[in-house]
Length: 131
Image (cartoon, rainbow, N blue to C red; front, top):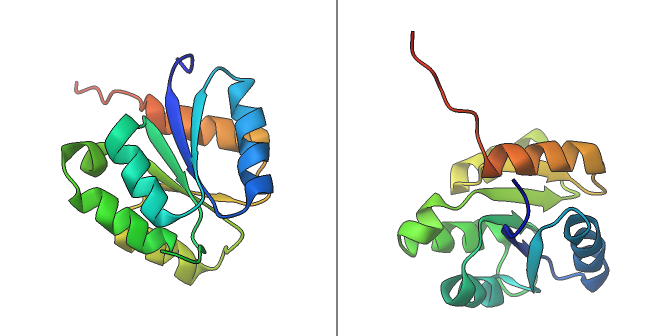
């Protein structure tokens, strides 16, 4: 279920945030935005989020450090799904995302269907069943 779910979009580029906002609001998500890592940490502490879409390259604090700090900030930050949203697509970048605690990876520009599938999966993962 997407309606009412809050996504924190962290990106230093206003146009990127606008594109993500429009696409996700049309699908029933509530969007909050931060243009840098420090602002994202403050905003998450104040209003929380069900999922974070994190740019990797930002001038004040990159997405890797922001993720590490969010994970260390307490139970909410440790549990929230964090998905990289980046144009950096090398295997090394993906490995760095995994190493800092990110849960997923979306390439910019993103395919809306792929992004929605990833977001829904992160918000409502399938329940493992035992036999």
